Image 1: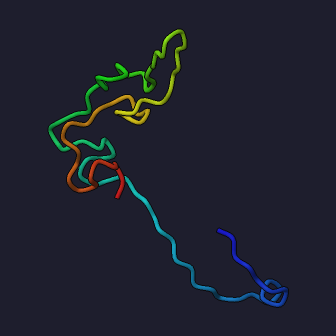
Image 2: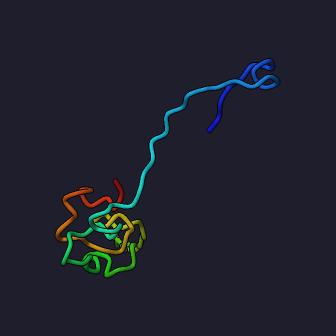
Amino acid sequence: VIMNLTFSQAARGVNKEILLNVVDTCNKCGGSRAELGTKPLKCHVCHGTGMETISTGPFVMRSTCRACHGTRMYIKYPCQECEGKGQS
């Protein structure tokens, strides 16, 4: 947190109010991002590598998987509490 203070405030002290957005692990799914009783599956596009290989003629390009966005897993039933983010 960066806060601008005058020299006088820094020398003598001052009370300032700040607001912070705190992100915490979802209480329902425990951060797994999946609905209770289900678990994430290995991504069917990248086969759990997080990367996909795209061939265009003689060239081969590797990039972050478009299906799982590099997370290596697919969540069929995302947690309804955190909308599959794992955080609330």
